[in-house]
Image (cartoon, rainbow, N blue to C red; front, top):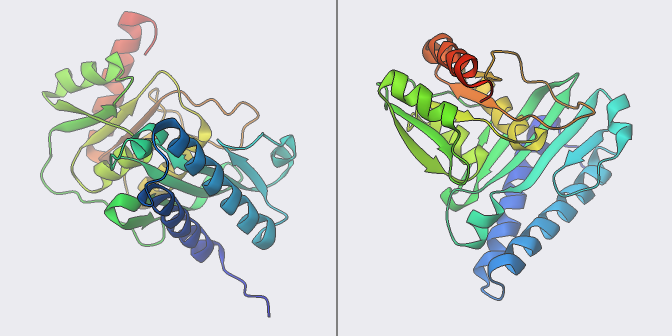
Length: 252
């Protein structure tokens, strides 16, 4: 008997299952450092690819950990995956790594999940809502490459900045109200943001490029270098601050 999972359930279970695989690889304690990170990437990628080959053989596929197949460009439905976002954080025992699973249709995420396995939670676009209480007065930025434009925006608002690893972890901290915005510039790819954007958009947050243009997916060129995810009431002023930085400096 063949069991059919709808897209929503499949997305959630892929995120849950991948997180369990990755925790198992790490918790057994036989691998360390780079070997641990590479094993996690490989095993998670292999499992996700097998599930989608079985359950969604006609859909396209784009993943950080797999060679790109240009056939995806001719498909309306494409799974955009980062099996382990934050490999270094995962391999060094930190909690700010994530699993990204998104199904994109006609360029936009229609169902998405971001798993934070060390916290035991999967955020899913079907049942998520942003925490919009008092401002935290905080912006999350890349742990390794905090962009100057983020510090510029923080200064304009009188906010602090907090460094964090995975893009998914940063986006989910905005959703949880621990930060008011996630600002990134200087290099990302579609798999870094497709799932976080799918979840955050469903939760009611603002998601765009730093120039305010929309984020679209399943492009020939998968490079998507900058992003703003923030509380909706801050979006216009943050985009204005980013535009001012660009005018003064010529780039983000």
